[in-house]
Structure formats: structure tokens, C-alpha cells
Amino acid sequence: MSRGYAIAREVALLGAGAVLFGWFVWLLLKKSRDPSLLLFRMIFTGAVVGWLFWYVHAASGLELASGLLVAWLCGTVLAVVWVPVIVDVVGRAFGSLYDGGDQEVDPQPFYSAFQALRAKGKYQEALMEVRRQLARFPMDFQGMMLLAELQAENLNDLPGAEVTMERFCNQPGHAPLNIAYALNRLADWHLEMMKDRDAARRSLERIIELLPDTEMSLQAAQRIGRLADTETLLAPLERRRVTVEKGVDNLGLLREQASLKPGEADPGLMVAQYVKHLEQHPLDGHVREHLATLYANHYQRMDLAEDQLEQLIRQPRQPAKQVVKWLNLLADLQVQHGAEPDKIRGTLRRIINLDPGVAAAENAKRRLDVLNIEIKARKNQNQAVKLGVYEQNIGLKGRAKTAEGP
Image (cartoon, rainbow, N blue to C red):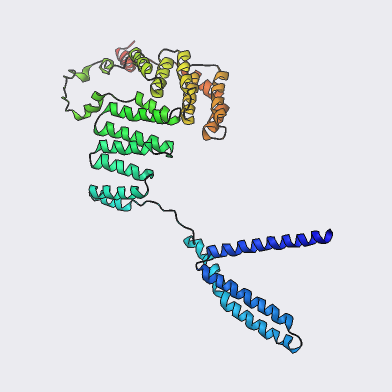
């Protein structure tokens, strides 16, 4: 039983060795520049080594002494056969440090010819060149964007650019950021070239349709809320008549000039406009942020300001950078309007809890360390007495009394 086990083990070891040797030979043949010549060298080497072992085993006496000469001759022959191979392998190993070796380069499109033709104003030739590249690489994002830019900006073919962008968006496998960028760029072209607010809105709504519940869709919704109307877009193109009103007579002789300053915007009217706008575009964070500032600074209603900022902060899919900005604004308003220190600390700790390792969290920690000083400085500033304008020429009174005498 033990002898059978030993034989089986030896057979298994021999088999494993043969498999490893065969795999090694296959790997060498695969990486070789001339597999047939390498295979011939291996067979020739096996024959020479086999004959040498047979000769040494069969020789005796003087023949055995001559075996050293035979072994030397066989070694010389094998050196002639294998030294070029060894030199080539070592040379390629060092050369690959500089030229990349035999690693195949993935094919990729080249747009240098397209860029040169476009720079020379040869737009039709550039169009043919970029389409030639896209025929080989139909999924290339850069090529699709270059084609759309050429159509929109150089060939005045905005409908063609829109078709190109739609074809790109319908291709599977593209990154969401690339899709959002392409449609935002299309919206820019509609606004800049055609002053078409509705077409730009449709492009942005396409982002919301293709990428729902993402940061890109939220940004598209916010941009829709800030789209200017058609009249505003066309205003820079219209020639405006400038009416010069008559100035104030004897401006230098006026005692008071405060009435000449332009009036500030009515906060109540601005709040009404902001509220109406947010009813139509509730995701417009820019307007909601301004509304919160008005509530706090003009109406002294920190409860309403905090409510507006909390709506922004708790809104899903908001970028962390924006959330940090609004939390810092909330902390600023709380300090400015005398909120409890614990409440302000809680706002700053929310920044830290978002991601303790980022720079914004470090800034919040440093602000927590000096928060008491900041609160005290704000209180002193609020309690400072502002000097008003009590009387003109007050500095000349003492001189007048002296001149008149007691």
C-alpha cells in the first residue's frame, strides 16, 4: 500500500512538473518574436542534452575522460544557440523602461488634424475629419462634443448640433457627468446664439429626465429657475435711447445732499418677488439664500431665515460644498443676531459631522475655538454708539466766541 502511494505521488509530481514546464514553454513561445525559431532551439537543446547524458552514461575509462571535451563542445554549441536569445530578453527588459516594451497601445482617436483645419477656417474639411474619427470611435465623448461645437459655433447649424447631442445622450454607457455637460452646453448655445429660453429649458429638463434623483438634475432644476426671460436676453442687442435728465442746480451750494442718493430697493417688494419666484421654482437655492438674508437682516426674523436655510441644507442631493456654505451663512446670521452660543456651536458641529477630514471641517473647528471672542466682538459692535450729524460748522463756534469776547 505504501509502495503504491509512493508511486502515485511520484507520478503526480512528474505530472505537475510537466504541466508547469509546458506552461512555461507556452509563455515563452507567446512572448517570443519568432515562436517557430524558439521552438526549434528548444528541440535542438533537448536533443543535445539527451545525447550528452547518453554518451556520459555509456562511456567508461578513456572515453569518460574525453567526455569533458565533448561536454565543452556541447556547451559551446548551446551558447551559440541561446546567447542571442538571452541578450535579446535582457535588452528588451531594460528597453521597456523607456519605450513601454511590447505592450500594445489601445487605439484612440486623434483630433490634431481636425483642430488644425478648424483653426484655418476650413470647416467643411474639419467636419469630414471629425466624422472620420467618429466612424472608428462612435462612443468617443470628445469627438461628439467637437462635432457639436463645430456645427453650432462655426457652421451656424444649431439644429444639427442638437441632433448630435441627442444621439450622444441616447448612446448607452456614457458617464452621467458627460451627459449633463453636453446638455448644459446645448442650453448655452440656445441662449447665446438664438436667445431661445424655451429651447434652453427643454435641454435642461432633458437632464432631469435622463438623470433623475442626482446632483446633476438638481443643478439643472436650479438653473431653470434662474433662466432669464426672452426680453432680458434680447435687451443687449437692441439700441437703447439714453435720456439725459437735467441735473441739480447749484449742487455745490446745497447744505444736505443725502436726498440726491439713489433710493434703495424696497425690501418688502423684494421679499414678495422672491416668494413668488420660489412658488414656481422651489429648488432655486440662490433666491432662497437671498430671502433668508432679508428675513434676518431687515425684518429681524431669524426663525424665518433659519427655516429657509434649513430647506436648502436638508434638500437631498445637494453638493457638500453648498451645504457647508449655507451652514456657515446660518452660523454668521446667528452670531450677528445674538443667538445662543450652544445653538451656534451646534451649527458649526454639523459642518464637522459632514466630513471631519476636509478643510471645511478644520475651519469649523478653529472657529469653535474662538467663538466666544467672535460673539463678544459682535456684541460690542452692536452696542457701539453711532455718531450722527448734529450741527454744521461746530468746530468754528469756539473761535467765534473768542473773537466776540466774554
